[in-house]
Image (cartoon, rainbow, N blue to C red; front, top):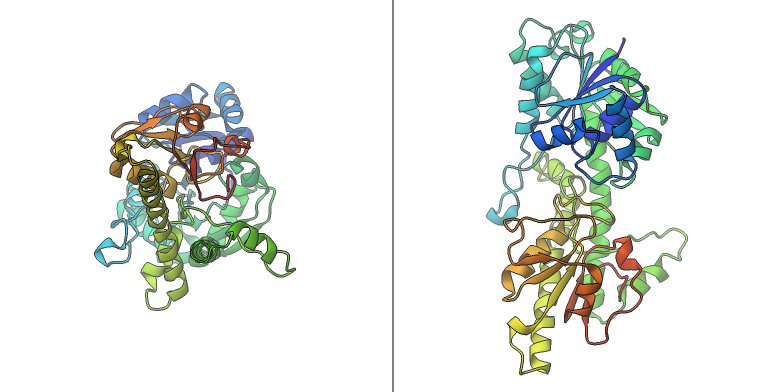
Length: 427
């Protein structure tokens, strides 16, 4: 097949880098997004997210005429859908398991359907529950009865359909898009082969062929495995706190065993992968996914444990300084992104902790986040963005939530500051 024109639907943390990589290989790329600001920013050769090296690639691609952004899909040889897959119900507060919401995938499918033509390839990159690719194919077929699809006639379909989950680490997306192996799951063998041909335009890693359901499950399995491992570390940190043991030292000692590799604990688990993907498995197989379900519960409970530590610190300070009220106690939260050195707040436990502290505390809470320049009040009421050194010098309780490199450079805090360190860099 010939892929000279490629369309990427969704220009976020995965879609934009993917579009940029195709454009960097001199392919004509049309990026589509409902966010007009993102579209306008990209068409100026700039980016609306934080990702190292991406700004240079996007600028070059736009300047040279290989990348443009729009809000309306246009004809192309291949379409890659990289839109969010959130939940219909956010958490288990109502006793129900979170249910995946495929609305964005459905809307993206309906948006590209009018411009599909025979010979096109459609790839779902969005991390999805098992069966989502088949569902996308059904939506496309309903919208375009004049075209044939793999679920109806197999190998001889007019449209090729495949699933290829992204497997990249924020902060390293540009490199990993090129170097990492890709799992390619077509609805038929010809679908897989077409998708492999497309990704080989820029992917240097191996393109491994499977079917769409296995490809969907592969991504969910990778992140569920990580979630279980993190849950062990988070649970261990709570146990060690109760037993008055330094969990960071303990893990360091345990990891000296040649077959042990315990991860580092934190304030929870965030991002649109590890904090989300396990629920896709649990929602499909609730009776069977017992360990995966428990790990999710452990990691989702960790922010509440951190909040209790903050409440205890406030009470201790008020007891030691009876002349002070709660309003006199200054609290600073260091980091609200879901991981170090990025600006991504999606599913961030640190952000949720900071919001909860700001909501419960009677005085404004300082927020230090080096990777963002503004934060609307409706997103964080009673929270004020603050510079790092100002917050350190003017606080009573320092809540370290993210191990940004700027925070690692701080060697010493004022002696009066009570530190709640969820990452073990100021302990």
